Length: 98
Image (cartoon, rainbow, N blue to C red; front, side):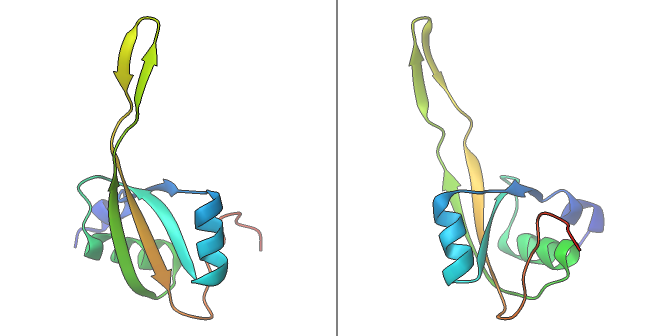
């Protein structure tokens, strides 16, 4: 795969109450990814960027919410979320502290 493409697949980590619980219990990390990304691209990107071994990847499409204001209705963008399971004993540190 193209290494330049892999560097642009992951957009940002998705931090929420559910993702924090998954990180503690199931050794999973949640990322916002490019909507055209495949499971193998996500797996290779995580392994390349964070130097960890990935067991599996689950992907879901999140629909954007419809919002109403006094000027009419609008809609947030749809986005893609990836649940990445990391092998036991490995960890991803987002803070970058050594």
